[in-house]
Amino acid sequence: MNTATGGKTDEILANYADVNIGEFKATKSEYMTETELPVTVINKSSENKSFSIQIEAVKTDGSRITTDTVYVNNLNAGQRQDFKAFEYVSSDMLEDIKTASFKIVEVSMY
Image (cartoon, rainbow, N blue to C red; front, top):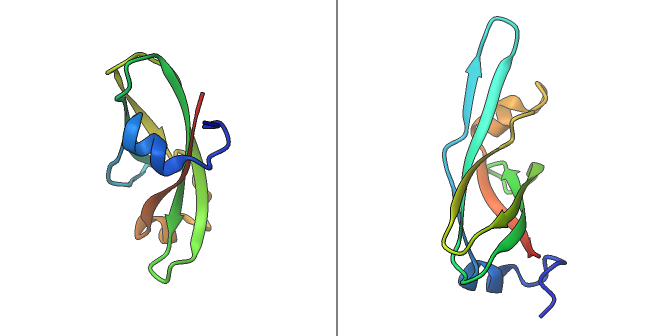
């Protein structure tokens, strides 16, 4: 099974990884807006795995705004780790991303 190319995303999510996407946050400070999308990954297999998870931000009309990738290295069996995606959002995309839905595009496993 070749799991390194993203072509086995459904199988990886069913058998090896739980990916939970939280609520997007944008916090405006004096000089900039800090952004983040919390992502939790759990290795539900019985051995150490690494994952590459591509997530897309989608407008209400279904069009893609942008993507981000979460890299999970050497997650032990049963272990979970928290990540932040979409930490660097350009100002021209910010308003669209605030109302976007987020979806997993593909997952690769190594």
